[in-house]
Image (cartoon, rainbow, N blue to C red; front, side):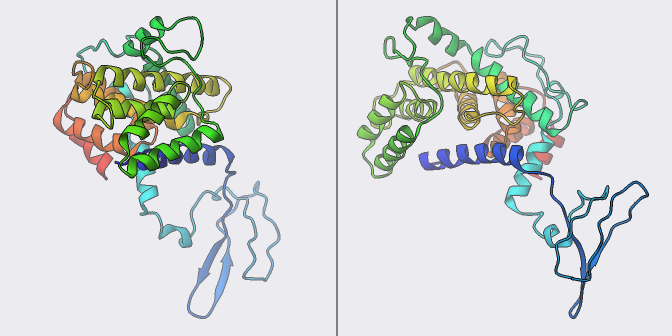
Length: 327
């Protein structure tokens, strides 16, 4: 995956969240047609339903206010197998409660009081809010992030011994422009200047912290330093979690402006625990982080958690869930 793909994935997570919050319930017009004619039809109604007057204009888009308004029309049914719909179905299938897949083996990288997600309470938005709350707890209670916080001095946004400071989490327009320029340099092969720019931006920006962490992990124009890499990834997660925790507390069930950064950071921390990049390998933590990112819409995490279910990595094998993720 390229760096530009990471930005696209972040934007997709943001767009999914904002669209879900601003989109009103859809109204549908039901139509029957053949080669020569087209007719508006009405689903069954009941005495307590309001039904507006129907005109003879077969091309009008009269609103229906019956209890069947959520049913899809024939014109949209043909698109149900699109990639976007498939990804959303896969994400919904994972909402089965984290306790059903958890391992009996503990992990020092998972808080002992991490909430389990039950499928018995709330609608899909409630469950997504629960999963994001789980992500914020994972991020803020991550041992590496807690150690980094303990090393920081009293000045917010400063760095101590090359470690990332607290800083901000959300990109402003200028920072976003600079991140795009750093990516351009990376794609042009100028890894040294690209990574140096990410390093400067990482003082105050969560997305840049993710990029700089990946550069440190893989040695893009800089000597590899996996422990420092996971420190930057952990700080990106923690910074984003602070923004998202405030959004959830204000009633935004789909999260806030830093949701994309939070999910990306959780996914990359899962990779670190899986492969032992900068930390000891921890299959239980990797699986838990993958599950959390997957339930927040990260399709790469969905693939990884399916492998965990298939191989019994970090917990029991679960071929049923593995098949559902790939369905």
